[in-house]
Length: 524
Length: 52
Image (cartoon, rainbow over all chains, first blue to last red; front, side, top):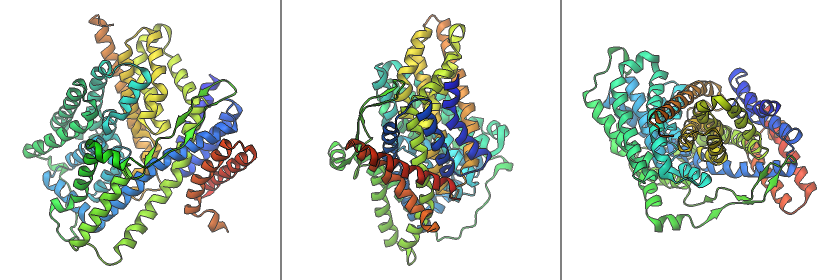
């Protein structure tokens, strides 16, 4: 019990400082880093070498993420200064006058599509400023895509986190896709409902239940079909494209409620054709497509890689971390590099079309610095403390404490807590992939000991890890930096934390329901 | 001096460089250097906490 409470202290510290004391993520993360280091050394027996190795791994992961953050900021400001963002916002508004439906299409469907294409925080970095430009509040502008994209993380971005789960548990993907795709499809609908709920509560959901069911149903089915036909690497991307197509179809017949008609925003920019405004994002998709699907291009761009090899390390209590290499940064093939190429092409294009004033380069750089620096300072302590917790065995102690509640006669209810453990891993490590790596085997063993379906418990882990990515402080930092909320991340964390906890719990209830149905049908 | 210590660029770069330098010292089995660099990193964390 002491282990569990001490392991939970860093999380409690960061949550208290951000939500109650209203500290920014950087200050709260640095304070929680001290708490983590002290507990890791004095209770969990972590030597200083382990702290150093964990922190160096944290720096490598932070560099991986920050490459995307800085490049996404440059791209956004290059597009914004040209007036492209306002044009895209105007186009979505002209698609439908229904303000909550606009939020649903951008914050849920478009964010899911971007997760299918790129991931690593790109959906939030791209969608949050678009929503802000359309008149949504900064907190809502960040929270909506954070919640909206989370369900598609597992099968998005070439399903890397699903592949990690397969690799670490040794269970074939074909045995996991059925349960995982059903759980995530249902969770996706909940995510869409949550995005609508943010804008106006349950009344907003009730009024848009038809578009919500049609759009989320289409995305869920598309993902299920792709995952179960063995092409789970394209599950998130296909779901996003299907969702966008259905959204356009739905807006053709949908009439907005008079109370929810979007306000007309003052148009202070020169008009730009929509195709021209979309150029940066179309270029980005083409570049990602080339870098992903053309092996020669992928090999060429991925030729120069930066990584560090870390030795094995262990605590005095015997918790062992095996040798591993840091996530390699392909200098020219990294998503951040693709965003930089896109920025350069877009900048040249908009410059040729005469959309920029004088001193534009300086202005874009100043805005990028102003947004990017506070985010960057916070990234190292936040990621560092998560990796220290993992290496000292604190994250495992947390999960073990949670699982102990569901031992013996209560074991049948374990699927309820399984997604929460996955979400906890994603929250602490900032990555669905890492959560699956850290907790995959633990969940498999627990399911086997409890005598319940292993594939269902692992699907619940994967779904929880996917949903938990909305709580990752590093992603909140990314989103806040693009809407001028750097240093004021507390309100966003508060909103996504409440929503994330509810969605994860509902995911657990659905997993329990699936287990009971399969037991009733004699499937266990 | 105070401005330089709390400069965001300095804090950001120091928080990136010090852990990697400490790690290189660990690999080189220079325990003293590794501990000093980790201590300096802790000072940077303290400065981030104090920075408003």
